[in-house]
Amino acid sequence: MSEGVTDFRVAKDELERFMLTVLARAGADTASADAVTRALVTASRMGTDSHGLRLLPHYVSALQGGRIAGSPKMSFERCLPATGYLDAGHGFGHLAGYTAMAHAADMAGEVGIGAVAVGNSSHFGAAGCYALAAAERGMIGLAVCNSDPFVLLHGGTRPFHGTNPIAFAAPVADGSPYLLDMATSSIPWNRVQQYGAIGRELPDQVAADAEGRVTRTAAEVAALLPLGGADFGFKGAGLGGMVEVLSSTLAGMVNGFRLLPMNGPDMATPRGVGHFFLALKPDAFARGGPYTARMRDYLADLRGQPGRGGARVLAPGDREWACQDRRDAEGIPLDSANQAVYRELAERLEVAELQSLP
Image 1 (cartoon, rainbow, N blue to C red):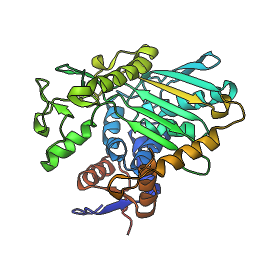
Image 2 (cartoon, rainbow, N blue to C red; image 1 turned 90 degrees about the horizontal axis):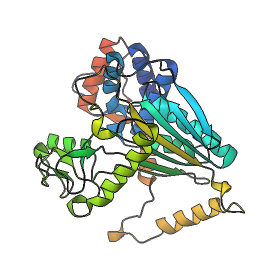
Image 3 (cartoon, rainbow, N blue to C red; image 1 turned 180 degrees about the vertical axis):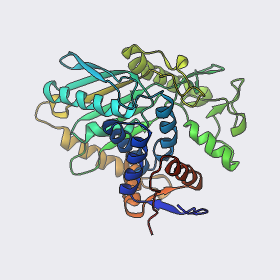
């Protein structure tokens, strides 16, 4: 990568090559490196760079610091015909996520439904990756995870829940899956950082200062508001709590309020993050297998609705699939900050630098 390049785009295969090599040099085994790379590249192809390529340097630090085990001793116990528990062995959350969803889908293939709680894990990137993994196997998938506190309770003055994402995916015959991936906060934390970097005022009712008062100035932000803002934040706070119960509580882990911060100074102590994954076999419910036709009709009706100002109405996932098609054709962009960080990783770990598309 040459200095000063800002329009820097890499092919999917080139980004995968770089990530796999960097993670291996940093101490990850093959299964861990494959899972992290799969998740990060999936997120960046769909335009979610905050949970994609930008996370690689953090994961290298956590791996080399000892927080994350590069060769985890994971163990899975099938507790009942449709339930199981995965001890992630303090390895990468991405490996835990794909492994747990595979177990959930296997059980759903047998008995119609499969649910797996995961304990002793770590940050797993974009939750949508694991719901999508279920949809790619013809299953409806749900993935949730807790995180360290960033978000106020409704009427609260200090962060309590994490952004606690909810991801849901459903297979679509002859088309890309329906894919919803959302935080339970009004906006993600990286949006605050982005607005602060460019000196832009935040939208109203999305963030608060240290006293719990709504602010639109990024530099004053000490917490995010739950989905719904100051007036209706009980909705987002309730969803965040639901995620907490399904992830940390069900798996026997500490709740997000007690988690070590993801970006704190301690990169040696495992955090003990909890996840939860659910897979449903669509034709295991209503007789006659109506799912495929009804899903097709639902999406046709949704996309056929009139849009405000002539805009096109999109189903969850449509924007991401369009971005994926564009980035597969044009390359995945790296801004100047990420170019510099990736250049440093290449030099420090003696890995061939990323090559930009012509």
